[in-house]
Image (cartoon, rainbow over all chains, first blue to last red; front, side, top):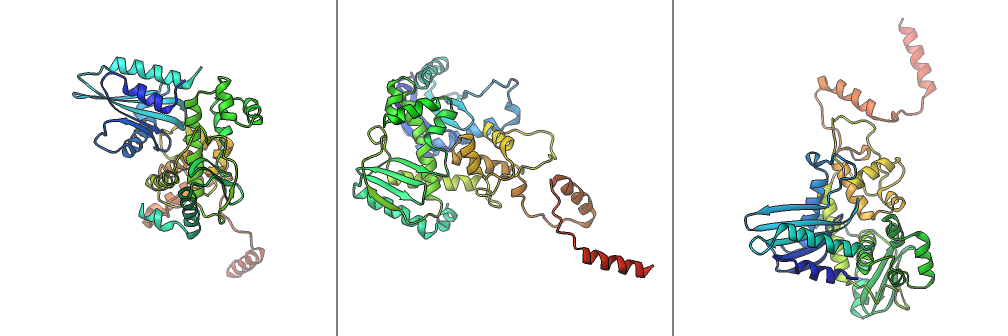
Length: 126
Length: 272
């Protein structure tokens, strides 16, 4: 069973992945980063990801219709590629958030989501 | 950020300098902080941090539904709960790492951002986490400062961190969006427990609860974090006072002064 560094390696092995940042969703603390440095440093990336999660969770327009409908992924896409924010664990205060930046020409959204889910399933155990 | 740094009293700096000195010396042992705080060191690396104001690692794991209470105790009797639980297939190494991270930086922030007694170091055998997990004193201190700054960004009005959480009894708005943790805090707040006490009882991180409570303060949902009333024109003041009276659960009346009432009564009787 993999540790955190092994998970980061698996995330970076997803086709098109250029950057993976793992953060504590409640505090915005950086846990680990891999790949090319993005437009901001890894720490700002982690804190920004946590801000995004908080904004989504408290946005009235995004309230779920069913009580069991938790947020598991946030996807932001543009012509050059996309960002996949996946939450690991569904506790109210986290625990973890992974921000994966994928290039549009080499990556594929469905593939990235599928691979990310299996990494998270492996991490979270039975 | 500057404000945070300026607020740090000398005794906190004593803990920081002692921690940096010990880690630079490659110390192995436990640095006790106050009665219930401890930083465990192994060859100059930080292997675990504990603080009585934060829920312990065991509680974080059991509340998250990862490990049963008895399983942890049984593993603890074996001396090394983490590796034993992993061996038994009850916990993955990544999960253990995740929860250790949450626990260590939560306790680290609590110890490094509050005044405490002079830390005392005892050289002793390393903590059971030493072979599987480590961080540096510098990282612990930097993360603690980052958290202090992040909390100030959420709310910098009247202080709410050490106050009993007292939610408003009445709402003057139609709808509201909260995070799960904020809802948990509102549902459990009783006007007596502080954010840290709620964190311990709920098995959530202390920092997570502090951030959630500051968010509640910023959303104007706490009685104990009302900004001072602005000066209101006379005409609207009466209406405003009426809503305020409705909001208060217990009116702030002073003890009845019978003597004053008697004198008032006599005075009024004399007038007629």
